Image (tube, rainbow, N blue to C red; front, side, top):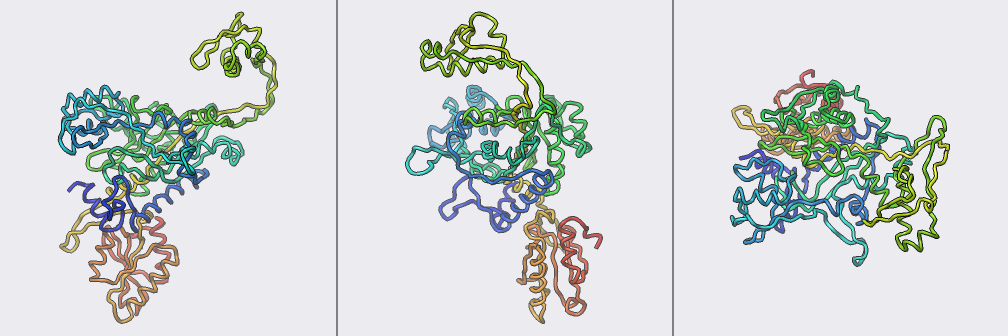
Length: 580
């Protein structure tokens, strides 16, 4: 049984996650988190907030999951948020074409998504790829782009189209003018959001790895690209497992171990802000239970880079021999804010005050509309705007008798004397800066899947096979299981008192008095409960309980009056079990 198969079986049986709407046949790409999974998810999100919001001093918002069409026109999602789709001519099943190429036995293509459609169609013919559902030949079938967004209407009728957000980032970008005010217009500042996103995947697969509804934890860090530098010294000695473009393209390429400082100084990670977030993220992955022997940072190849990104690294984890992306670290530049400023008409910049006013020469135009209107009709306004833009970016263009501008693909020639072009001396107290954005974007569901897969262990205890989840105490859905040794002589009542007191202290507690004590231990081991407390006859006589540690199965006696603080210290990492 594969690592993924055994995990999916355990997840459904023990209440971590299961396919949604099972009574109605289920719907691919949608999962329900059970009691264990919902708490595990909450713990991982809480750990993320602690590290990337509280400790970094960032803000958090919670925006709507439905947004108007205009937002996605500006962001480019309407035109460029596509995957390759191919439909079987026999059974009618749709498949993601790039995945079929990558999964074909003998295929050496690792990133078909980055290839042009025509080249992918050629690969179908070269490898003679068949439909995985019915076996029909797919060579020669057309491959098309398929937009992944879920559409809807806002209000009655169809006059106000909207979409379920495909990422939480746009909810931050569209609110930037107000968020900048909350930050007192002082760069740098960061804004985070944890929430649901939706992508109408062609072929959902691998349980939580590729789904249609998922949770993202995203951070948009707005910086002045000319002045703001990250505090690299905080993480400069952190060792990063880096799989760069150079190493990926080399015949014997491999992961390099470099410190954050070395990675920046040697130019392996070009942007210091990305390097900074790689550094603080590594410790966080380890904290929630990712196996660092099955982890790497992989740089995007040139064909993979998103249209907005100048550089991007993925945090990847290994499961079943495959590497899956769990986080993307991208330098988005000013792409998003500039797009929303252009489409909305609002100002998406921050005013930066100079220490002292400065006098500068500023090219300006004051077009003669009494000439432009009759001469160019409806295009006059757009021509005026383009003249102003041209004066700012290339004042030398006005040196001749005429100046030429292009509006909607059509070229117009205007006499310079009709433009009102002039260069004036202006005293300025500051300037408007369009911030650049550094974005770490975490896939919460994939991290949950990774943590469970990496925590899954088998061993033998007292001659019996045991399955357990070696989850960190902070991450585990339940911190402690409380058991009476037997359900008699007042042991159960005392154990219930202990459970109530521990819950009141803020610990996640399970009470279990069903079956042999060994069976109860196994049940808690299988859901990752790090500690179990057993109330026995010595408890009644001496006021102590047995505390058992999950991974080692070692046991120690602890006084009841010290139990609460001991378990809190163990959960929070302030004390080790061995030191008790």
